Image 1 (cartoon, rainbow, N blue to C red):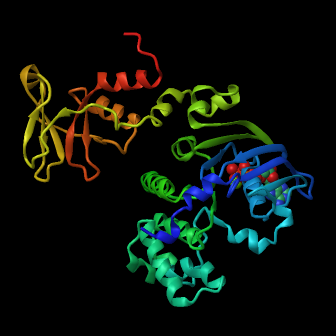
Image 2: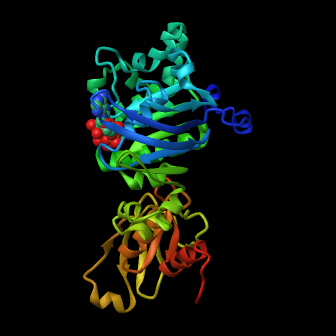
Image 3: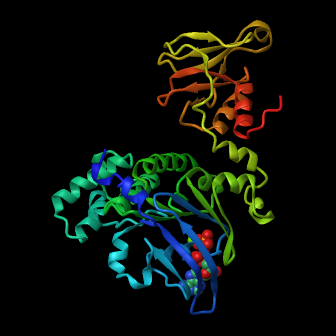
Length: 377
Ligand SMILES: Nc1ncnc2c1ncn2[C@@H]1O[C@H](COP(=O)(O)OP(=O)(O)OP(=O)(O)O)[C@@H](O)[C@H]1O
Ligand SMILES: [Mg+2]
């Protein structure tokens, strides 16, 4: 991996506020009289992801842009590493900050590789090392190096978005601002980008401040969620507490009544005990009295074959739907898999999709109750 991109973990965590961003009683009234924010205070800790959610027009982008001085507060102050941004030279400040926007915002007349290398070049780096590094960054965000030769319009929306992230990382800034970075891509690509960003963050430990309309995205990516209401803040808390202990009915309204289901997306599947199922290509395993799990020629789960009393009722094999990746996916995915399976058992695979085992829905229920510290049965 890129050693130059690795977070200086001990330094960052040891120093108070290093890379951290704070809003101190910040207000913003635009020249036309619009009061976008009134007296907000937020601490975005260094090395963590803080995600702003809230309805349209409630001031999320305004707050984000105050961090890199694209917008200046009319009251209060914003500090980076404990220093008021108002007292910092704009170029010096922005050197510490990567900025990713919706639709990536790439320069159309520049090749992908040069879009990524742009900021290091502006900072005086020579062309060849800047391009080499840009190629590494493309790899880091999951794009093939050949793509660097193309122009932005020759890429899909999801690929452009990845280039946008690579470009923001190019100067290796400790802080990454992201304003609805994935909102313009379809749900499947979006999920993929979210997974990628999450694993990238686990390694790079940037101070991320991100805006989204999507509570699922916020809960998945955030260490800390900030729920905005028009002009102010309704709650600042961990994803877990936003879901289980909303400050008021306004915050609760954001979960659309599905807080319990969303909460399952915070619980790992790594601790689930798997029941054995063969991973051999073409093999089958009887996992319950009535159901046999059949693998395809690559050792991936393919279909449920009815046995026992199910054999006389079911017309034939039932295709497998939605296995979960053991240790990577969260409990919501395991529960989904169990619900969709005729045997009531979720199918666990490795990251390549090969059968690892099955999990009974009762084991999933037990994991949920254990996580809640509530086992009454
Ligand atoms: N330059 C400006 N001049 C006047 N009013 C503005 C300006 N920029 C933003 N506003 C207003 O400030 C308020 C907050 O805008 P902001 O863009 O921060 O909202 P947001 O939460 O990011 O919304 P969205 O989710 O739609 O992106 C809105 O009422 C908006 O119309
Ligand atoms: Mg906005």
